[in-house]
Length: 403
Image (cartoon, rainbow, N blue to C red; front, top):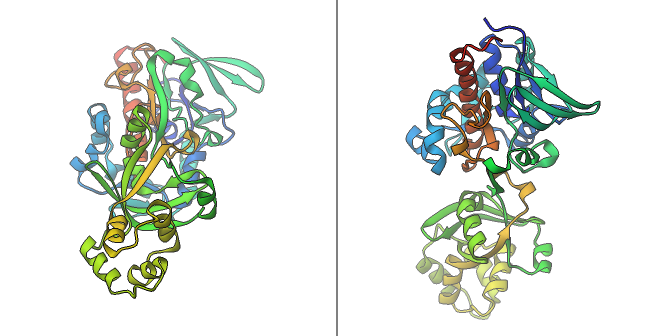
């Protein structure tokens, strides 16, 4: 039987909290350490726009969303799949629903009720929380932390690292931990992020907050539809997030790059041309675009910026369906929804133990995997946390460690 010597979970985001829960449910004493004052800060931020837990699409399609990381993540995702995550949330009193896109949300559209119920459960299970503990060193039998009272070394039979990526540092994910394992990590990069277009600063300032609704972006064979919004940090939105890994890598190799933007993807070029031909020639270009196609002021401003000499119905129809969108670089790393890079997957065993540190496991966004928005990120965190907890239990029992 497990004794009272706590297992160590470092990181109090979703992956760390869930790993702690799974271990505590097996009867282990668990202590969570985090450099922040309160747990779950990034989860609360995600809940501001409605907490998208996971996705309901076919499981094979779901698995494909994890790209090159699928081979390591698939057993974890199968062991704790989307329906298990939904059931877990509902057992905490947070019913879910499936949206028209297949995404699964909490009905409350907020993370705070879920987090409160979750923390209550962890307290009932006897999990303890040590805030203001920043990890500064790992060793074979524990870890060292920087605390308000100085350095503190703590021993533990097994450790789970759930230290997050490198975006939204004010919420806890600052990536500083990677300096402890430099030879095992790849550099962080932005994922599911915005990008900086090659538009004049005054144009971006005038149009900040404007939205391009229901447009399509095409980059090579990849095509995505959705809304784009211009912010002070660049151009953002679901189509860019979905293409971000391709765009980021190509920008790294050779910047700038150019995409094709379709402002009216529900209409053919011929239909657009016909509507424009029906307008009075004496009308200004802006009025013809507004009356014939209902283009927003922002769309019309973009056309004026990028193709100022396109006036004929044919030239305008071509521009509207294939407007060149040139991007210079990704937006800042700290504002990305998630990050690429982190702890290399080949540094782990199939049980998510770090080969160089027997008894130390890792899960969540600190690992070098990517997935699009749509519930895949949270699902990956919960599934790898489950795999870590199972791996810890297996390692302790197989090695006959006395705890």
